[in-house]
Image (cartoon, rainbow, N blue to C red):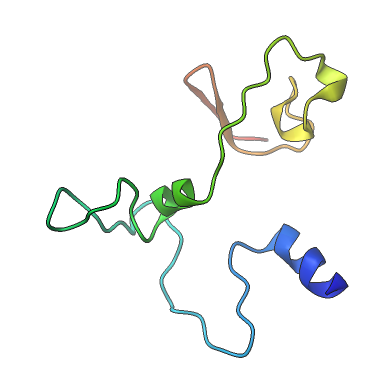
Length: 91
């Protein structure tokens, strides 16, 4: 259980006793569309599929020290991200 918890923090997919689907989680990989192609508002594969498992959280007037590192000014983790509609490469 401890190993699974650690791996979950690192991986986008955890497979136990099976094989991965081979479908990449990438911007170019996308399924979906209007009904009848899809009945869900989110796709089943690709980066847009992540929306199916995310829960948006708004941090309003939160001091920097209380924010998750991913959201702090200066990008201390060096992650690629979008801030105020502008892409940052994380370097």
